[in-house]
Length: 327
Image (cartoon, rainbow, N blue to C red):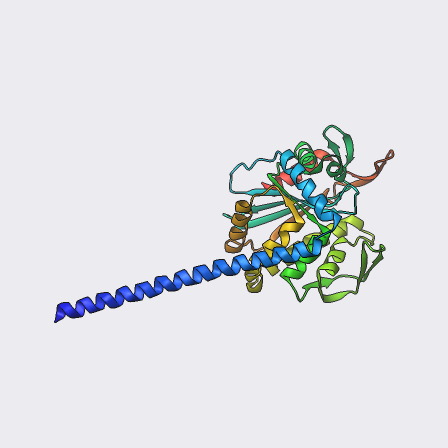
């Protein structure tokens, strides 16, 4: 009798284990299916928005060329340095790099750092002489910009990611359909025709993608690019908070699909997924930020045509400031 009870108990335990394993398998398959569906929906939606536009074709052409040329190497130290570039693509013109940043993420120590480099910073561009740093992108894409950063600042970006401003608005609207809550410090008005129109009132508001882009790009005040870079860093922190929220994590697969048609990067899919997983599981409490040249190491200088007005600085001091911040 005791042996029969023991056998029945073993069978019940075995059935429970099977049910538990089946439930886990069902959850796993459902999650994979949900993630795959959301990824494809995000990608199809983005492709639908950019289909037929010249910008998409040009981004694809640039992608192949840039990936082959970029010589950044992952040193496998657990810390990832990415050259982030925001470009303004207008028809057949050479894209201009309005935003230049070095983003660093260290999952083990759960830290994230962001260095913004003013686009008018006066630097030595290898093979081209001294010029504004954003000219390096126009001359030779992300690889020449990488070489310029290595030569002038002693920092070696391992990857690059280029995002078109039109893509930025769509990404924001996917991540935060109800807008991103922003404390706008002043009234902001600018009419740039069909390309850029900004009309924002001071105060706390929820901004959609187009409005948030306008907020980040506005520089019509006394501090010009310095204030603009501060707003860009503020926007990235706000988007980080949106991404790490519960609803943001659920939207991650769709967001990855949304981003893909708008971003040119030499990071492979496995690297992107690995970084995304680490960022969600080991999120940084904050993103530390730095802008260079710093306020105490910059002055305006006018150079002969076609360079024009630049931000001059003590190059050695700037290099030391960036290295100490990142290392």
